[in-house]
Image (cartoon, rainbow over all chains, first blue to last red; front, side, top):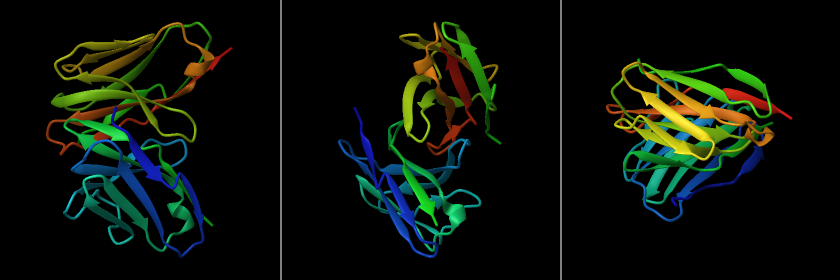
Length: 113
Length: 113
């Protein structure tokens, strides 16, 4: 089946630094990838839609200059959290679209100290 | 606005009980509806996907139904086991949503031994 990986699975960084999270589709190509954020005991909230070769589309309230998304190939999208703050600590999950189905990565736990 | 609602938010049952989780959605023009399972601190596991033309899907002890006209879906779990304890998320793909999945807030299930 379609497998999506994320790297790293968890990361701890200091406030003010930047962190990059990778999302890869391992055995298929995805023209569209999605980034979600999940706070403790809450559901997944869509942050942005990433299309290969074009700029990402951000959901309302998500700062595009803070959450930089790059989708340079059909198998890789990256999310960079710039100038991270403790309130950015969350679980970040990506998904890759094939037709009308999405396949989810295992998530990345970000803790900003 | 397209929204997904899940009730109850939490549920605790003794082992062996049959149970029903509910999901409701605004706007019946959906493409599909999907049920996921999420264990604490982990990613999503897809359980069942129901296309808009289908009424139900079954996998083992799980049965999901879809009633588009009333904007409802139910996930039925038969003979519950402690290993079923997790958060169950319902997600809807609307036809005009640019492939964006919208998630409900989830139901946290605890099956007591």
